[in-house]
Image 1 (cartoon, rainbow, N blue to C red):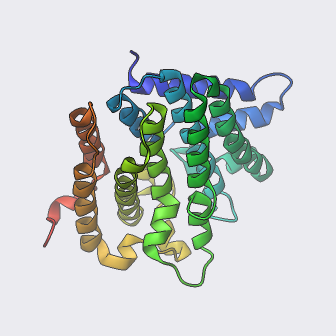
Image 2: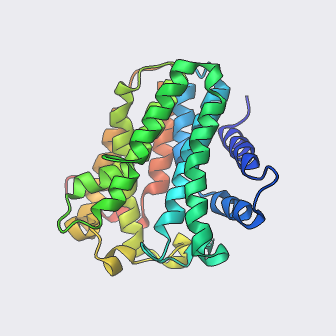
Image 3: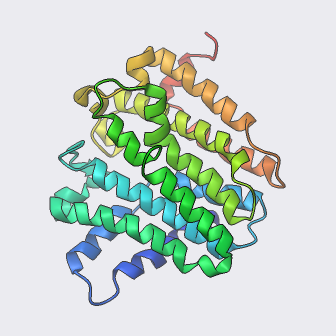
Length: 292
């Protein structure tokens, strides 16, 4: 079986080929490719595939489609986050953001197109297991829109007061919950037991992102730094301080690993989560131990 990363990249390339079918506006097609490639860590689709493999992965084409769909939604959210009406970011993943490279109108259209493409990708493989495909579409929709998806997460930033936990759950954890639950669904398993794992990984990722935004340089991040403070956004660093946020990160990662449901590939999945935990942890984390 191909490596997880190879499967993800092949599925994304197949999805983007849909957007290049002729006749198609060339600049918009190029903007879609710019938004997706080269990717970052592809952590969300990797977690999805890792869960599916741990649960048996008996419909690999459906798993591939689910992984591609999830990453397309994530890429769309980055395109929209970078727009002048939100972060007004010039760079993303070490290169010009889509609106800087292709114009603001094309960035809006690219983000919208990626969202629609995500659901089309799932629908195209629906014949593999119609009941699973419908559940995948439903879960991805729930974690993308309102009231608890990434759109809601962005919406919290316009509220006069913000519940930090609810904000992080929607803005970041939503797609990690989608990753774990969609991986289980693609393999024919119940989604519900996998919610806690996704929520905890997502919460840890957001705290790590807040720490990196506060502590790292734009060169290290591949995007502007200090955005939370600049835009007055709620963050774990603002709420707990740097050392407090590091303690929260460590505790959350430990709870995530402990929450993995029983499954045939449980040990391998735990190793995968630990590997991502190590990559997530900022260098400053070694100064603080849980419970200090």
